[in-house]
Length: 158
Length: 248
Ligand SMILES: Cc1cc2nc3c(=O)[nH]c(=O)nc-3n(C[C@H](O)[C@H](O)[C@H](O)COP(=O)(O)O)c2cc1C
Image (cartoon, rainbow over all chains, first blue to last red; front, side, top):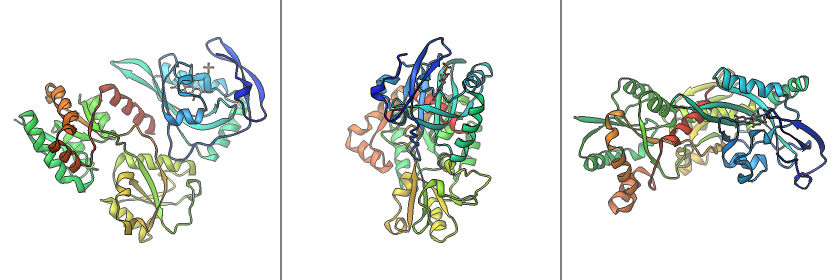
């Protein structure tokens, strides 16, 4: 994936190089500006078995700051924030694929403009005729207390 | 042979006669005998489903999972442009202005509508509220939930948005919606049981065409629907996956 574009970023930013699991890497530009999820919304996406986005709802588009067409076909790590420890996503894939179970967790996501938003995410496998055909994730607004706990924990893991 | 048709107990009682008219339409359309069996609560309807006493059902998203994945039901259609959304309502004079300001010990009044209760509990999460630090009382109808709020017996009420919005002006003037869900993908769906799958195509076609005749339009009106929209198996599978992610 391409590096983030300075022209898209709002506010003071720092540059971080991220190495992804698939061997690729890119430079992301991150700011300290948080966008809270509006109350009552659910942010929904689906991927193929490899984690490539196939479907997003309007709330997903709004919160990510990307255009719909930029998201479809992109790897889900397009939202990966450098403050998120790799261990969290290793646990996600381990739980989903190896153990065949639902995964829950608190995730800090990166916006196109360099800002971030915290979510409580659940991911499950989509099973049709005994085969995993993709994954669905639904994210909702976490409490402040849970966000602070996650921030403290993740700082010890990155 | 008489087939059994039932409607999710959370339907709005104002449209009761509409479902009887629908049942008559169904018989005329398919040439089969259908009996409309209405259950008073989810418990007794689930019992009937478990005993395979249901052949056709207008089901809520919560029950769709068991019906489709365990019982072999197939989706046919859903009301066009109508999704199930929930709203948390306060007494008009409550000092609370945001979800985050809701305190532990909150007294909740609700019905036993499972998807509304689930959506509302999710909307309380940003305040760190859950079943353990709130108390809840279950009412038979939404009107009784409104009464609890107005009479000070509850601090917050859970409603289906459609029902809340249709409450009388006098009742609504004493209440205040705090937060409304915007989920958009959860809806009721008409599901056909394994004994009737052979009529799937014909029924789906007739439902979608209902909107084309004056008689059909008046039937739709009596159900408070604008039209029926076809639902494909994958649409329902998606909704079930989504409901799965929301259950804790
Ligand atoms: C359905 C689904 C949703 C996901 N949602 C997110 C997300 O919101 N944010 C995120 O950083 N990673 C998400 N991931 C995980 C990414 O695929 C990826 O594992 C992660 O961003 C870390 O990147 P890496 O695995 O390349 O190191 C999701 C994965 C799946 C299957």
